[in-house]
Length: 83
Picture 1 (cartoon, rainbow, N blue to C red):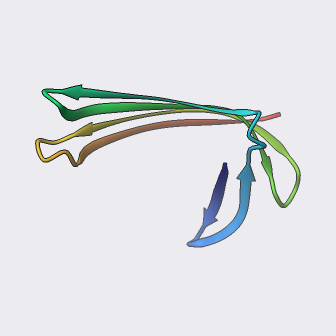
Picture 2: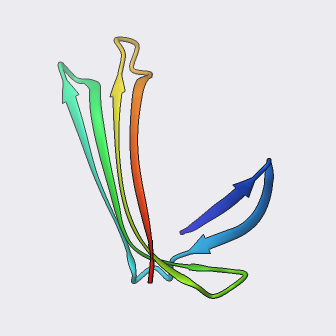
């Protein structure tokens, strides 16, 4: 998993996880055989490619779908803690 760090439209760094330190949990909810909403939770430790600093992340995302099965609303909450 690699997360680009963008500043003023330029990629200035990237955070990466080694695969063992990052967990992704996804829940997809259907209603009448159609997408209704989904939730994604990401937890783990990411490391800066340029400095080697490590960060703990805890991210929550909830997406809702409209009648056509397209995303209508997205909610994000991300927390990075320097360790």
